[in-house]
Each structure stands twice: as structure tokens, then as C-alpha cells.
Amino acid sequence: MNEDDDLGALCAGAGRALAEAERPVLERHGLSMWQYVVLSALAPGAAPSQLVLAQQIRYDKTRLIALLDALEAAGLVAREPDPADRRARVVRLTPEGARRHAAVRAAIREVEDSKLAGLPPETRRQLRSALAHLANAD
Amino acid sequence: MNEDDDLGALCAGAGRALAEAERPVLERHGLSMWQYVVLSALAPGAAPSQLVLAQQIRYDKTRLIALLDALEAAGLVAREPDPADRRARVVRLTPEGARRHAAVRAAIREVEDSKLAGLPPETRRQLRSALAHLANAD
DNA sequence: TATTGTTATACTCTATAACTATA
DNA sequence: TATAGTTATAGAGTATAACAATA
Image (cartoon, rainbow over all chains, first blue to last red; front, top):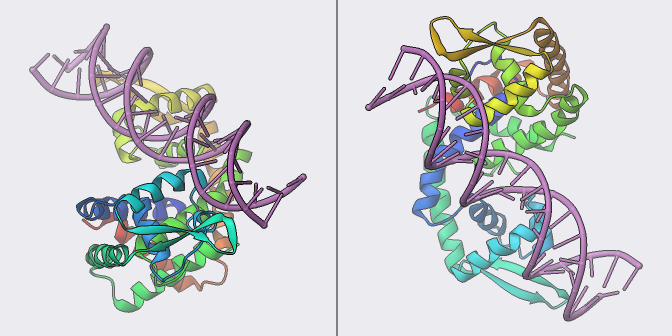
């Protein structure tokens, strides 16, 4: 992985390395990556419809259904009918789901911090800022 | 995309944004992402065996075959028998392949530079360095 | 008529196993 | 016996189309 590589290749390499390091953590907690993404999206307390949730995490709405089925069966999320629109179902974290997400997130942060070892705090802050800039640039 | 997100989520978001922006460039030049990755690996002038090439770009050796078939049919790479091991075939860029890669890479760099607009040169350098660090950290 | 959640289907991508020719 | 390249097959992941209930 050379610093003269394409930026896309660098992002892909870093993302793959992180995903490989985090996969055992997710497995230990019985979650797939996408299930963790769903929990993370709901963690701030939001209760979006399934369609809005799918758009937020950029996941296919038809695939989200099986994902939510599993999370609901595990007692981590709850689906409730939307009083304002009886077609829609609103998804929110259960207390157990909130606990599980907090635990997994803490473990993930540990892995990420170990990967960032050697980089000064200011560099880490700039890295997060630059990545957010890239993800949001038109 | 919040700066308080997991680092993995930030990398994935930035990588996806870059891939989406670069896909039209690759299509315009008639290359898939993995074909471009192969050309990039060979661009420095290396002539690895197919197995070594597959390991270098972290691609399955069985899938690499169809990829090389297409690149060879397009006249961008050449496969030659390895004189030292008659089981192995050595892959290298053709002059046309080198030209094509240089052209695509220049176009990709343009897209990446536009995505990086707003970030000072020192921040860009640190971003590349930090991503390379992440990809190589044990 | 359009939209949400859902199911079913088809398609693509990826991984596994087996074959050949060499080593 | 093991390895490089190849092929064929099975599996996972993803996208598309259609349906019922509701707007």
C-alpha cells in the first residue's frame, strides 16, 4: 500500500483492514456488519420508517426486511405501526438493543484505537474530518 | 455522515463516494474497477505470475483468469510463459496497456482532486499517510 | 394513481472443489 | 506430493418485478 496509490485504493485498503479487524468483534456479539449499521443508525433514538432507514444507511429496502426480522427476533429492535401513516412501520431500538449496540461500539472503538496507534490526536481528528468531507462532497 | 461515526463507517462512506464518482470515468475508458486495479499493479513495470498478481491485489486467482482474458483480448496485457517455471505464466502491460492506464489514471486523479477541493495540501498529505498507516497496521 | 412493506425471482459476484501440466 | 493455471459448480449477495394494504 503505497502513498502514491489512488485515493480510492487507499480508502479501500484502509476500509478492508478495518473490516477484517472488526469482523471477529461483531461475530463475538452475534451481529453481522449490516445489523450493526442498523443499530448504529437507530442508536441516537431515531424511529424512522423502514424506507427512510434503508435510505439513511444506503441499503436496499427489500433486503432490510430480513435484517429487521432477525434483529426483531433477537429482541434488539421493535417495529410499530406508524399512527400517522398506516402503511408504514416505525423501527426503534429496544433497551436490550441499545445495550448491545453500546457494548459492540465500545469494542469496535478499542479495535480502531489500536489501529490508530502511532498517529497523534491531531492527525486522527484531521483524518475523521477529511473522510467526512470526502463522503459528503458532491 | 457524522464525524462521530465509527472510523470504519467513515472509510466506507468515503470509499463509496469515490467509487461512485470514478465509475463513469472507468466506463468511459471501457474498464471495470478490477481491470483498472490490475493495470495499476502492472504499471510500475512488474511482470508477476498470475498467482502473485492475485495476491498483490487481493483478488481470487480463479476470478483473475477471466479478467486477464478480457484485458488480453483488448490488447492491454500480455501473458508469457515463465522460462523458469513452465507451469507459470507471467503477466505484463503492453505499450497500449501502459498508455490506457496512464490516461485513466490521469482522469481518476482529476476526479479525486475535485473531491479534495477545500482541503489544504498538508491535510491531503496527512490523509494519504494516515490511510496508508491504517491499511498496513497489523 | 402513487407509496409502504413484502415476497418471489433473476442476476451477479464470490468461494470451493476438481482437473491438467508441470515441479 | 505439491503447485500454477484452468474450469465447473455451488453459494452468498444484490437487484428487479410484482402484490396487498393504504394514501
